Image 1 (cartoon, protein in one colour):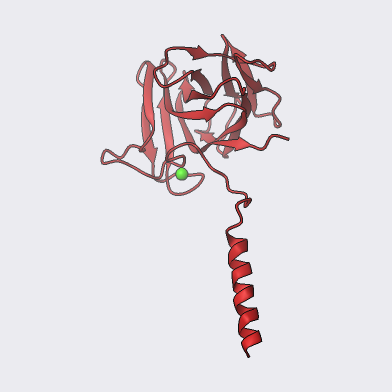
Image 2 (image 1 turned 90 degrees about the vertical axis):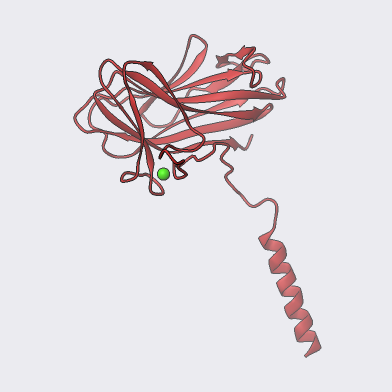
Length: 217
Ligand SMILES: [Ca+2]
């Protein structure tokens, strides 16, 4: 009997040990409120900010449309309007990151959906850090070759962009994604990810935005 109890205790201890193995794969999203589920008293998503670049874009949380959870972010514009919703995070040097977002748009309209990435040395934004495609100690390196045909990934004026490439209906959820490397020459950098909708007639919904580290091969 004692031996059985000992065996049982040993098995429980082993099992408990397995549960807490540190190498369990866990996706750690650096963004706050990435699925737009947490709302403030005004009904806006905690952690996200907006910029109106031109005209009168409308920003709201849609509690009837979602890729995951119950809510999504909705941006409604017209051909004269341009705006973006953004959030900032610190990234560590010597690591590769993946940004991804799910989106869909109104049927019957041509959409202009863009994600722009801007980076600074720190939160004071005293020195901007630019993007390139070659390994460099002074620039973030973007990996522009992406699987799938529903996006263009490019660098313009030293900034990184992903653009939805479709021009017809996109009532199904699609994913935009890009990976990039922060060189080890930086201890850390401060990144702003901006979800743009510009000069489109209608609405675009965003959900499940993610910035996570990718294992270096
Ligand atoms: Ca959601």
